Length: 115
Length: 114
Image 1 (cartoon, rainbow over the protein chains, first blue to last red):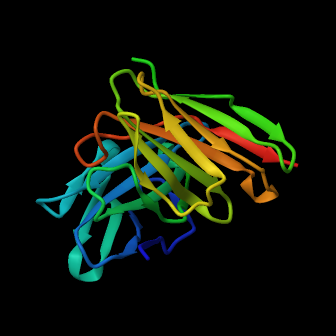
Image 2: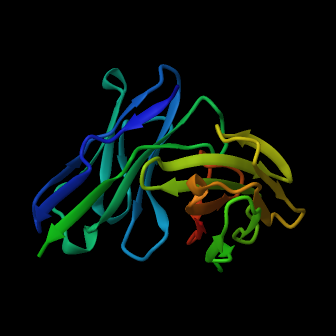
């Protein structure tokens, strides 16, 4: 069965530190990959997505992610975090089911940025 | 443009009862998906509707069902509620699909089963 694994459940960083959140998936075929974010008190929203082309994807608010097919990974990065990046981050995969809303989510990573 | 709305926002039911949750997508969106979020299982896909047809389904028992109306509004029904059904139920909509379009999530309905 398809699965998504986020290695870090809780990350604490100081402002201006660099961020990398790990995400690995298990599926051997074509995948579409997503990172979603949920800020405190807000709805889940899309940060970025990959479905083809350049494996380095840029999203909103300075986030980027790199798809490494050989490692089944889609890690999220940001060179310098801000206090406002405090949120829960979810990696998700849509595997082999076309343009449908079926997403397999990871367990999420809570990021706390200290001012 | 109004976002995805879900009603009710909070609901308390007892075991054995049934419940219906409603989702109004963003105007013009034809795809509506439902997810269950719990602390233990995380976010799990329930089903997706597109133009009134179920396009995909997750691994949930038949007690969980849904439908979509001609105006794209969607309802989710859970019959014979169990304690384990306590969760935040999220609805998301997109124009045609999540690969070609962005999926927008609603605030969720918090269901508590006593």
